[in-house]
Image 1 (spheres, rainbow, N blue to C red):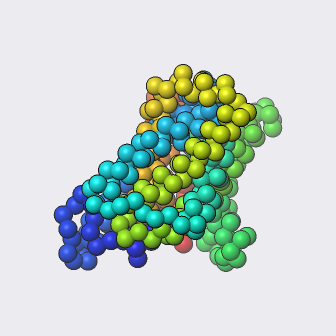
Image 2: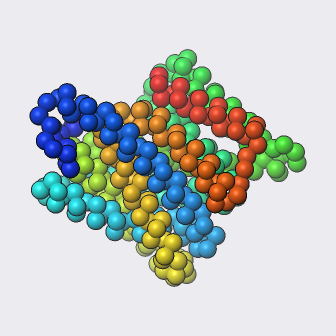
Image 3: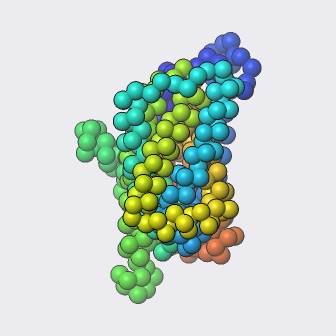
Amino acid sequence: MAHDEHRPSRIPFVPAIETAARETFVTSWLWAVFTVLAAGGQTLRNAMQRELTAQIGTIGATHVRFLFGLPFALVFLILVLLATGTGFPALNSRILAWSFAGAAPQIAATAMLRAAMRDKSFVLITALNKIEPVHVALFGLIFLGDKLTLPLAVAILTATLGVLIMSWPRKGGADALGVRPVLLGLAAGAMFGASAVGYRGGILALAHPNFVVGATTTVVTGLTMQVAFLTAYLACFDRGTLTAIAAAWRLSILAGFMGAFASEMWFLAFSLTAAAKVRTLALVEILFAGLISRSLFREGFASREGFGIGLIVVGVVILLNI
């Protein structure tokens, strides 16, 4: 989602930077701060939504992320517009089309992730989801004709081997493998990859001179579409889930805030530097997930599973450094 060519000469909330050297100095570390904050916020949101899944179901927990996240995203946008003294950007058909291309697969991806976490270890499903760059590379090969180089092939094979090592059952045969949650985790990563492509297109189509305004506007646009769709769907086919969501509003508010916060940080990071740098640093989310899994859910993972996660990380890092 990086588009450094659109980066403004002035950064909000920081004194005016008059030289390119000063601007480079600030953004050289600011994107890393945003990425770490995003990874931490996303991990906490996933943990909260896992608890919600048991209470209100997969679709309900998925909707919470968007329904309770939108008000916070709107507050973020209002604050940004007031701070920068700019008006709400004009939206055209291209921006809306790209945002929809990001919003729709994100709904599917979030639902798949919630369902997978209900059945299998929190940290392992997070690791499966983090091979999203592998899916993006495959999409590029299939739909864009991107060349499959040797380093890219090594990255894909390494990550795939990590998944197999991590997921293969110690005993009990295929039933112990947990095929369903593993496939859901992989599918969620693929959908998140497609969503990233759509949102990147939305940010570039907006082409706003202020990266904070552009990123925040894209977040709000996508969330608005998601809330409208899922609310209409539940109102027509599952009103009981809407009632359950309202009853779980306390935990839902926290999950919504963390979701909006994480989204804001991701988009800001992508607006400041190359997506490869952001995705590489974002692997700290696996470490965050491991800490939360042990402290909140009292889960652990065997050394072999840890080795598998390590291979996934290595594969993704190779992919992002090609």
